[in-house]
Length: 305
Picture 1 (cartoon, rainbow, N blue to C red):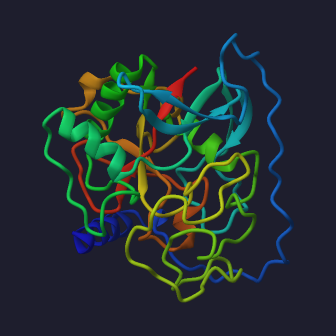
Picture 2 (picture 1 turned 120 degrees about the vertical axis):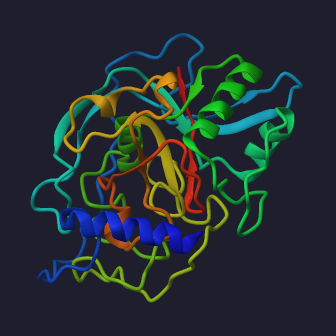
């Protein structure tokens, strides 16, 4: 399965060299400055009873048990994509201003096997294959259809508007107010994220020699500035947005469920444990058919507030 994923990415990259992720013969950079992670000034006031920005909350199931942990994020503006000066950027990362018009919540972690298996058993769906254990490992081998079905089931159980995040919401959350290639700054380390550390990024020291070649339990690394875990590496994460090679507004909306088969490719974000450091940059984007199930692909929830 892993070989199939790697082959698929290599085929895509060989067909379009501009999308290849690999080492660049760039000059050394100056030492990192601390990443900027300032709170966003809300452009919409929270509703009465709405969680305060950056608060962690859990909705209750009908039986009184707690649902997945969510983090409330404020509305705000940010620069999506990467500047032309960013090392190893791809041409599908055109930088542009995006407004997140309404507050929303996003999963504090990726959805775990514990989370998903509860849904699968309740709805008599097949349990997804687990290559490295279940419990607090991120769920893998789930399609876009599986992920949206889980969100719809969770909405029915809690009475809350769960869904997948749009591509724009995902990057907004991943950046957490930062503007550098990584939420950690100009470089990243395998002590900060689960990626393939056998290759460097812009001679910054991201090559540590560490390559787990598997998922790790969610929350294994320090959170970003907004309290979100594993936004770089570990597993690719489905978004609800259709892919467009040049940003055209699709990144800010969810595609309709009835577009799923065959439907356009869906954007995936986060980079997983498989890519080199350039592939876990905040702006890096990839795409897959909504029916795809592979062992480095999972998802994270969003919720309308």
